[in-house]
Length: 188
Image (tube, rainbow, N blue to C red; front, side, top):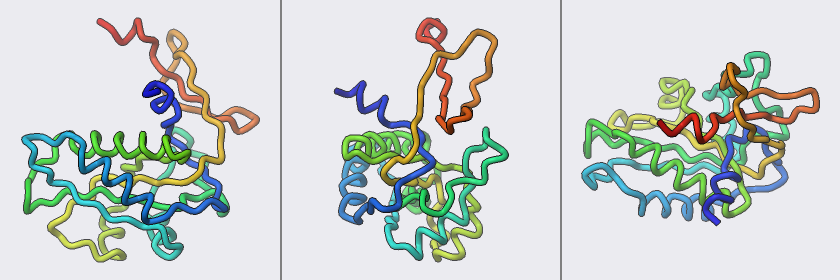
């Protein structure tokens, strides 16, 4: 069961905008984050949830999509995320967030996959602009954005060919290919 969830939890960048994502669903995903491990159990992360159209538009304008696909401008209208979870580091709790954001992000993405949703962990953020337009207090460091929705693209995982690069790519049918190193290559 876990393996299927991990395989379903890909980085989706195109979504079906006819399928909404509720704030209650986002709260359920943050509940998974709440129970995730935290360095020294400090629990310094906070979350902001967005599912309304106005906020989604503001956030979308502050994100960069698919660095390995420089000619792709990102999701077009009709295929944009229907919700976002912003992961914030509360600097009044801790000055270092170590790996906490990755742990909670993966927990939430697995929860999203279990609900039939997909998403993308976006780190390429215009943080200054986003902080300004959403009035994020200075005590919070913007760490990561989870873009969520019902996937509207096919993602294929394939073994990385010897000598090939790790960049993902799209074929002529717009199928998203993600090369992964083989298990034998990972174990040293």
